Image (cartoon, rainbow, N blue to C red; front, side, top):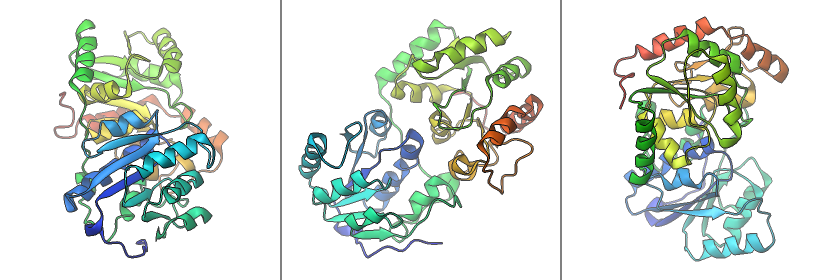
Length: 357
């Protein structure tokens, strides 16, 4: 169903502020909107207001002009709130896109007196906006990026799903650090495995990652990535595997991780930001998913590859939702390495997909 929105003429808009305070994947699937908007309306300047932990992702996006930092744990009152309102006011925005409908974000745009404020209608604080899109995402009928594109219905003509642009641009310094790391370990081609998800997904059990590494001829050297807190995952995998592994946990900034993913031959992960970054770079990838409603690959899979590049447990169905979290975890633990290997065979056999950069 197409959204309804009150009239808004983009030809009169000069400066836009996108507001988000959620996860990296949510932000990543917002960024292409800036590219599409600028293709249709070249006069636009588009900024982001996001938390510090996700700001580097927006800062690496060529069509994001400026990134403002949303204070941690900001409340709809207090010093941090007032200083953020003042910072927004100085920018003289014409339009605010509240893509993550949280009360504090809606109130910020209102208090900063941004003349046009667009949001979805399913929350009471939509009353702080004056342009509304009817949309309910709780039914998980389509991908998160498709929901975001629906917000621009009538203002742009979105391209085919496989042609959605991702316009990342990283620094020479970040690329140099990655190159130094690869040279130190004498790595040319490599597979990235990102076994953690910081609790945002139902993870494939670590022992299955280890069995896969030993059983399947993964392209090049195997590098394990993750945050510094996830470094024990490397230690556990290293003890489990017969094959040598390279530890990259906690060694790269977010921008440097983008550079590393851009260089990889293959990425294997749970439903987490590195998987979606790999999709943005059109890298061969495989993601492990449960069909639990809140994490279903229909909405949160790699865009345009929700079925072809994901693996769900054999006793779950892509067309339905699971509701029992405990059962979903048991189903993930029952995935067979032979099923993962068959899926990888198909992915790596795709034309021009397995060529290293």
